[in-house]
Amino acid sequence: MPDTVNRSELIKDLRKRIIDEIGYRIIMDSDTDASRKIVKIISSLITEYMKDGKRLSIQSIGVFQVKPSAERMGRNPRTGEKITIPARNVVRFKASKSITDIVNPKPKPKKPKRKTKKRVGLRIRK
Image (cartoon, rainbow, N blue to C red; front, side):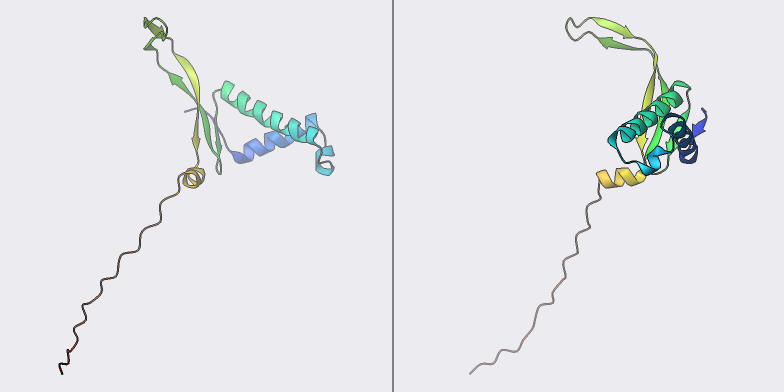
């Protein structure tokens, strides 16, 4: 099983990288350039973890990991000719349960219909 990088390690690496590349200015400054740099840093950190074969687990978001894909047969869509698709590594992402539940809400259970009793009344004849 590959090394797993959890949220606290990601934050520690992110903080270190922000201090190295942006400096403490980010705390006081809210300009978009700093935000772009932060997004770029996060992206490059995730890419580095995947390149190193590590598994990145962020509890409230999900899990990123590299998995091998076996060699398989495929078809050329133009000619219909059979071809061999070589084995390769593929990045997989599995969303956390909280995100999955938000995207696929469970339907509310229907209230059961109340059974009403037949009213038996007295008929008065005149």
